[in-house]
Image (cartoon, rainbow, N blue to C red; front, side, top):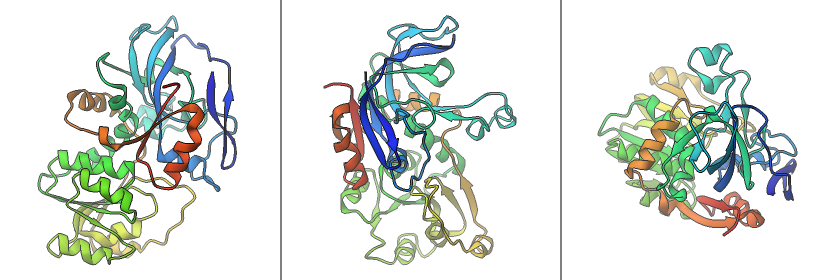
Length: 339
């Protein structure tokens, strides 16, 4: 089968690999219907990398699959069933797993980072990571499940009240998901900070009431203008490098959600402003038991994300997709083994 592997720092290669086979009794061998390129994949292929992955691993972690074969201990799936999955595999036995925090697992491995992932034709996943979807759900709706699972888990932490204002820092795909989810949850005013005109056009489609270009406008002043001089009730850093802006733009007593993850970034944070403004700061890392609810949301049709798909390519054209993401000229890049 064809697969895209991490060749070296900042380098990838489309190669031929053997089709994997079941090794454990709880494994599922699945054919990948489609996969998609995430901002995390861009970080993996950066130099220096924002996320460290194993050399030689098949990258990618967002996918829609159909079961080909199951291990003898698999009980919830049969050949022909379809599923999405959480690529972050927790051990289930460490202290954090036992505390109900599998996203903090001390022994976690991740498909597409430590283990072979989604940019291929077939994959093996453990049954516990898979969540069944209907035969009727379009693959191009289900493909949003993995990133949306992470965003839904984060949104749950801030407990937005209907009518509250939200500022989202960063208008990439994750920022667009936040905007649409907050709007669906009753946000009174949704603001987005984004320098790219391309992404700003999507922000309007995602329900943003105002899009601020911090390269041309004073972000804090504009946010206060849009919120009656107060600042936003909730501020989300969807980039991973904008904690200072989040602190400055939040109202006193507001909530800050730090979601973006760039391990290569360093910031100088004025901690006194968190104290003086009595801010609550949430960190949110991947998803925590949110995938079943995410599937319900996608199955319901309440959240329309189809217009965020900007590219449809095959594995051989991976270069086109990743370069579009790196340039900030793509939202959802869907990859098919073949078209």
